[in-house]
Length: 231
Image 1: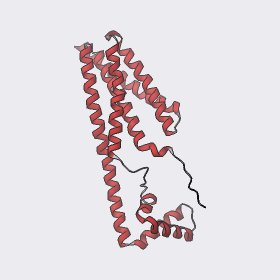
Image 2: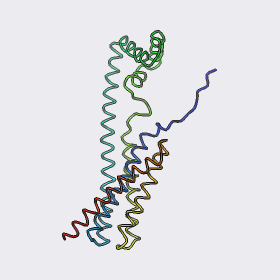
Image 3: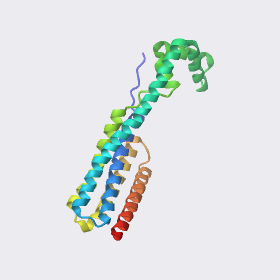
Image 4: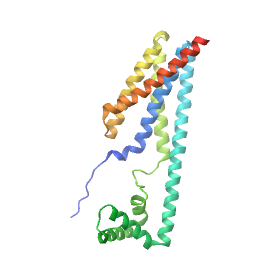
């Protein structure tokens, strides 16, 4: 009796995880950089807060729109490929069967067995077999524009909210070091979480995220200080 093996793989999370980590990282880095840059220009706390809130709203909407458009483009490409494959299966099924068998031969099956596998899979669901083994499209990798947009926008807002809360509770004179410090701590945690969820090395991912975030904040602070000095 055949008993199916139930197993979950981390690649099943790749769609929402990529968008969520990207959104949170962008929310922390862009909003913290904006706050630090405006603060370095000697702006009042109210102006810093307004700039930060505007950055949060604009950034979240931009992330949602960007993810939706880019992932929709991927979905359109997948649909076009599947439509083409569907037509080829309807008009030249034998060639498609041979094409599928040749894929299995390249993967190590004997030609006779590869032909048998191709025939059985196509008899079960020809389009799914070609989508998976010829085009590389599967349930795990299928583009989901709405899911990506929501994950990216919501995590951006959450990430951006931390620097704004820092602005509210920290005196203006201590604002820059506090925003930088809390943001770096958040980036370390985010990098570690993303790596753990995806099964990647935690330390490497945390250092990578933290380095680029700190660099962005340092450059923005320098630009803000330069314009503040000029004014």
